[in-house]
Length: 294
Image 1 (cartoon, helix red, strand yellow):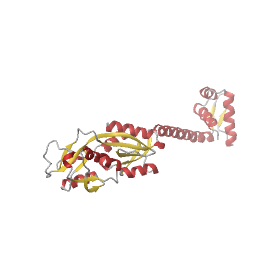
Image 2 (cartoon, one colour):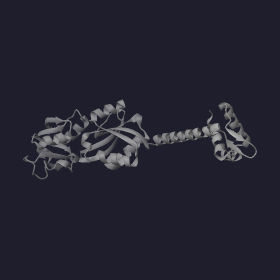
Image 3 (cartoon, one colour):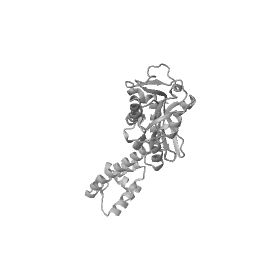
Image 4 (cartoon, helix red, strand yellow):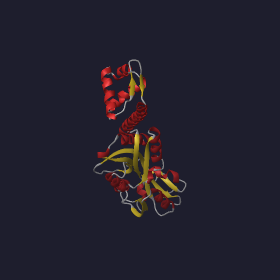
């Protein structure tokens, strides 16, 4: 069935006038009559009863008009949906994140994004930085909030959030009440650490604070969760250097010294596959950078 012929039929059926329909369609009246006749021949049914004065729908014509109007509404809906998908207004995103980013950052970004793009659904998963790299390459996730620095071939990385590191000791630790505590004073202390296997570059990054102070940290316990590291520090098992933000909810059980003067900062970025950039992902990146304010 020819769509142009069907549109011509609907135009005539709506106004019950060949001359008015022809003007609306910017066609000559004979050309319009030819299209309607061709449609009737194809369907094997008379759709319009017409004479010099009147035009009216047959029973077959009334049925076809209802079906055609439904069809054209479906076409319009499809066109709108495709356009919105293409522009990134609707869709579905699978997002990975490191658990230490959930305190304030990820909920704030997700809330702001869904407020601006209510037609987009988000599937958010807690995955380590190393696992996110593999998941991005395999197409299992579309974007990932990762611990930086991170240099991986085939991935694009945008800085989202930056904050200072902080020294964390238990409330009962001899250094707990000391003002202006420095990294150098931790040289002989046992360390609790977010393990290198979960974010190798991040591990090398924060231990750079220790190297700058002239020592390598003696790590007695590794953990895959920074919240767990805080609990172990609070129990007196060691000291830690962690992103300042992760310590905020736990300052009743640990003593925190924020390292504002040090140049090394804790950073979170959003990683995406270079060959899978879409308007939808660009919207997410823009929102994340706005909320994170690096």
